[in-house]
Image 1 (cartoon, rainbow, N blue to C red):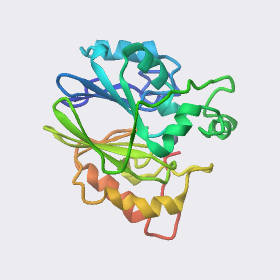
Image 2: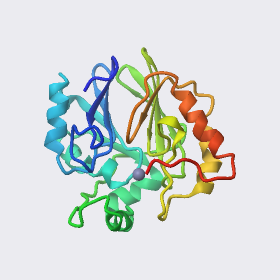
Image 3: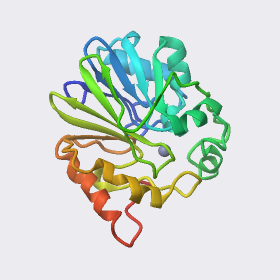
Length: 244
Ligand SMILES: [Zn+2]
């Protein structure tokens, strides 16, 4: 589903365009190559590929998969996509070990299954990342530059990805920040409110127009205002509004 001139939503359980376990999966058309941000849970990778084709894009042109973090709903499809298209899979160094190991405990799938977010028989396909990302890394992908911004809090090494597109400054936030300033704090290892407080400021002053979170709605103007709400809420005494 084409959202803007260069950004496509090719998977999402929330919008019913792919498997129910899938996070939002975005593709950015960078001209000569495509970059995919997150992959969904891996339960129906052919369905994602079909969506990409329906949007008039060639999945063979996916050069890079950027993973916001290693949770299964975002990273479960990486292994199959890498095998099919030979694309690079990039994730923060902290999360890379969880992705490669892929066991339920590392991925916090044990508690997620207990919580009813996944079927008990769901299995994650581990994936050895091609490259690891550090905070502030900038990579040229086709016509655009993608900046990695690490914001631990939802998970130990959650990354946001900023791409300045002709239609506006875009930020792909995974589970760090959602529309209306909700955050992705979980009651499991790796999710930590104090890490959120410490690092959320990295998203201030970016002047983001387009906000593309990993779940629920995306925002096509004044995205920074939604991010600002999250930053301000983390300065107050109450637990901020959460996405779950
Ligand atoms: Zn997550």
